[in-house]
Length: 73
Image (cartoon, rainbow, N blue to C red; front, side):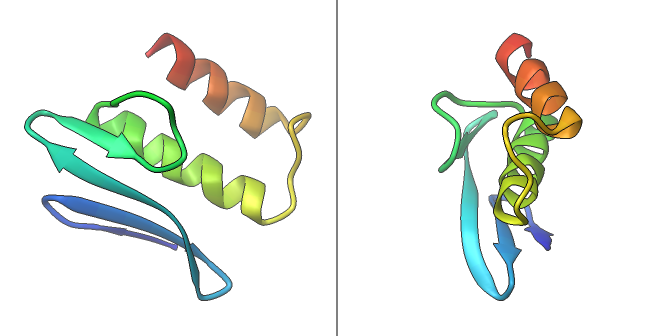
């Protein structure tokens, strides 16, 4: 589940927080991604973290697509 407010986002899976994003100026820093992102890209990164936590692997079509989007964003 994603929770989003003005300065912080969290992703949880099975009641455990698995990733966070915090806003610094106009960019978002996501705990599971190596570089700052836009607001929408941060949501994608958190969704990706949820997908991986739910047992989908690196060969999952959504995982592949979201990683590509984030890498080229």
